[in-house]
Amino acid sequence: MTEPLLSVEDLTIAFPSDSGPVPVVKSVSLTVGREIVAVVGESGSGKSLTGRAIMGLLPRRAEVRAVRMVFEDIDLQTLDASGWNRLRGSGMGLILQDPKFSLNPAHRIGRQVEEALLLHTGLSAGERKERALDMLAKVGLPDPKRIYASYPAALSGGMGQRVMIAAMLINRPKLIIADEPTSALDRGLQDQVLTLLRALTEEFGMGLLLISHDLQQVSRYADRVIVMRQGEIVERLPASQLAQAQSAYTRGLWAARPSVATYGTRLPVFDANGKPS
Ligand SMILES: Nc1ncnc2c1ncn2[C@@H]1O[C@H](COP(=O)(O)OP(=O)(O)OP(=O)(O)O)[C@@H](O)[C@H]1O
Figure 1 (cartoon, helix red, strand yellow):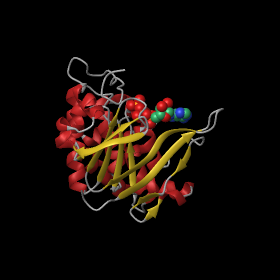
Figure 2: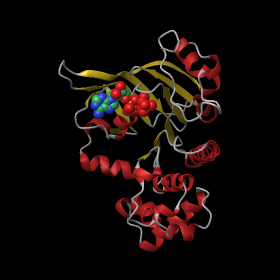
Figure 3: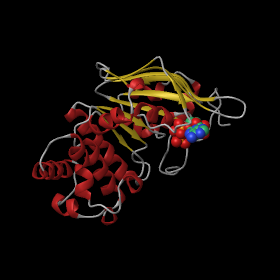
Figure 4: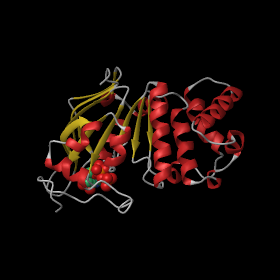
């Protein structure tokens, strides 16, 4: 593990209900350095909410408490709306599952890729365009000039996700949170996009928090893995040791990892002994 960029201690997230607050993330502590840390777990285990809390993107109703949530030297718990906006456009980036919901269909790709530069730097229009074209080429898109001038409807899913990655990385954030960044793509494209994310993470010296339900994928692309169940962390281990996990729950998830036959389906839910329930 490298020096942490992000440090979260004792994060708890609850939602109000008629019978009082219901905790859905319980006492989660984690760090991310210049590395890929994966958060895995069955559906509903609290992975996405943990990622969203770090980005300040939880629903208003959510009650969040943490002993510490620090990114570099910024205390995330003290940020106001403009502080979050500054941080999201420069220090941190979020990549979501489906570019269809992240790209604005009414705007050309170039404008969307450049947006962080427009909002957060004093670069001229010419400089922004140059950086955007470079970034589109860096994420492996053919003919960046044509893509720059296109609308999102002209792109395939894989190309859309590359555009999102270009838009997120253009202002060189230090930390990326990627929530199931490839689950809308077919298998071959998933590998391409993760290979790209891994290469850019290393090249730019970034940290990546990769939220995934695909343990096969995680074992190949992450450095460390945090396993969550019902809002709690049950195990932490190097990605290379997933096949030798200690907890029965992680072993159950590993045994149920997607194969070609089950690809695209959700992970089953397991009890504490790693048995499907
Ligand atoms: N806005 C909300 N209000 C109330 N409960 C919520 C809300 N959002 C999420 N939850 C609950 O919090 C729990 C954790 O949700 P979260 O989305 O973090 O799970 P996840 O591990 O990312 O699952 P998935 O893989 O299905 O996305 C779930 O039980 C979910 O029902």
